[in-house]
Image 1 (cartoon, one colour):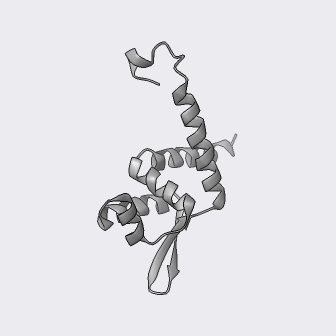
Image 2 (cartoon, rainbow, N blue to C red):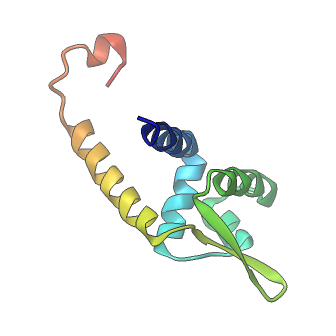
Amino acid sequence: MLTIAPEIEVLARFGRALADPIRCRILLALRQAPAHPADLAELLGISRTRLSNHLACLRDCGLVVAVPVGRRTRYELADPRLGHALDDLRTAVVAVAADSTCPDAVDKNCC
């Protein structure tokens, strides 16, 4: 049972990172290719300050890493498997969203 607690904490951290749409967009962008902050800010249409805060959160969660490239810093997914996990999660969520069999979805705003 001791090995389950860290796994749960890691999943909860991953969930917190995905709870914000901007962080989701950053992760999906980095899934495509590593990028510099200025390029990410332009791609996402947000300020560099706002992007910096989200990148710090993603770094703290262990999902992205900052790689020094000369005088600049490039960001990339901490592990290539995260890209595959994001793809799997995205397709699973789309499949669940298409399933409207939950009778309480509209009334309880739960699904």
